[in-house]
Amino acid sequence: MRRIAILTLGLILAFLVPASGQPQFKHGILTITQDGRRVVVQVEVADTPAARAQGLMFRAHLDEQAGMLFIFETESRWAFWMKNTLIPLTIGYFDADWQLVGSRDMKVAPDPEKGPFEIYQPEQSFKYGLEVNQCFFKRHSLRPGARATLTLTQGAAP
Image (cartoon, rainbow, N blue to C red):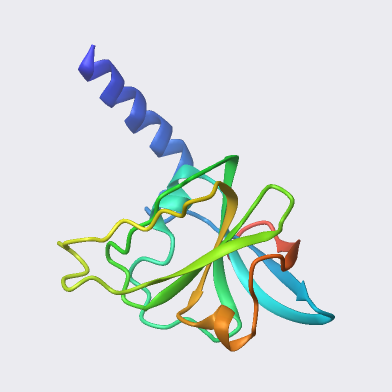
């Protein structure tokens, strides 16, 4: 039975990840508004299990107004970690109505490949997670209650 489950998982992942071994990310613009201010973030969209698993792994740089938007099928208390992540990040948690419900700084692990890895899980449920450079929300004075809208600009990366 275990062999069948492993084989099934392998077949599922083969369809989710292109032959290059890297998931394809959609691209979009996330506009966050609060108190009459607008902050625009160019996002890569991780909306499949393979894309969410890859996230920002192995990246050495992230532009200031860029981020990775994780989209989940349901609202829950999804957990994140920083395996193979080389950039200190902040994650903003948005509920199903695209309202910011919290954010949390995430630090690079002492050994990004082997850990140990801290698990980052919010106290509240969320459906969308936005990873950006550390302190992004503070620099832009974004706090719980801010609202976001997503406009997809491209179906997948070239």
